[in-house]
Length: 238
Image (cartoon, rainbow, N blue to C red; front, top):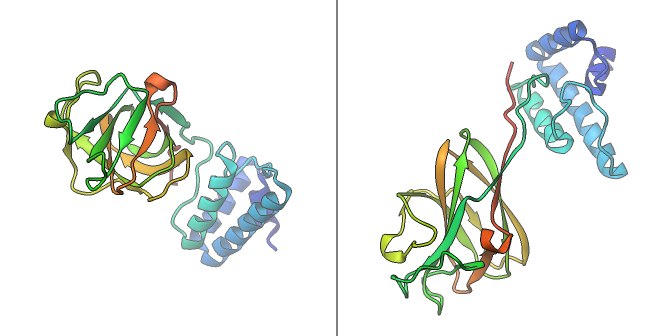
């Protein structure tokens, strides 16, 4: 086994040696495969011991588990080397406005309620949408976290148009993008639901549209259990 490669994986190389091994990795597919195998070994060992491996580079300062998996996959394909000296920070964003609207009572506003109801069109409650507003400081990948009750599934769609939390109604519901950002599977269990989405910069409306006859609810900011977005770190390619 290449001693420099082992030292690279263990984060023990000085900057000049680090630059040299990364140049070799870019040029040598076999070396990339060997590096990916070493990274997988770190991951498996960490899973067994339930401890995060100590690494100064090449992926230091990144969340260890996701960084290992992503780095191993990237090294196999030869697509990416991490610049761990300038990783982007993880940013958490609280929902800034939320409410729900219903087709059966199109003139009723629910802006002050503690639970946001989501139901499909065939539900006895009629079609119900939850509206969530976030302000994205930059475009990028994010994880949407919801506190949900048990119940049916939903589509997560990017909405358009202005709405007011205290006065949103079905008659003036947001427009919808043609393609969903993600789906919440049917028969979700109570607890946190985490969904991967990709969003543009600026003010974003996420619309949760029920796809199942069984309604379910998600927490609102009035209840102290509002939705949250976690922006994933930006990883710079070399």
